[in-house]
Image (cartoon, rainbow, N blue to C red):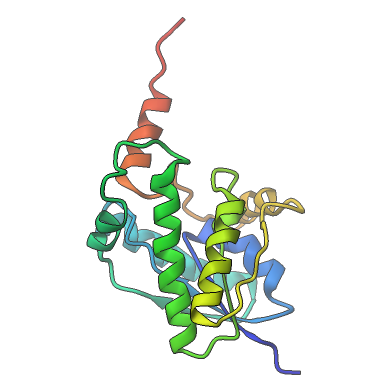
Length: 190
């Protein structure tokens, strides 16, 4: 039986781990690493390299890594820079990354596409589903709408991260979330 070809947008290896496990029996998976939101090229490359550690899961997959281009992100969120985590800035970032994923899926004849973003408790799965569905209609490639944190998906990603010794970051990737993460860590004594 030929399994459908799925293009899986990946934000990082930890989030991809449990999603790969969940989808492996049903799809031939290609991980698509497009993340211009990441604050530095060093961080971008570190996260890209961590994806190789997922080979230890013994799940067949390929990886496509797009070049680092933070200008894409800066243009996508222009005017939204001062909004906090979980705001319209994040929605614009989701849209940017999912649109590029949908375009790639269409131009490379994938049967379906989705993203690992919904495995995080910090990401809005309803926004992801809405954006993915609109892009599915636009590019004529089905979008797999699934909240991957359900059925202990997030917990499993934490377990696999420990097992595979994956680098787990404390922020989503953008310079704004990095600053917010630092501010959360610096709490005054009460």
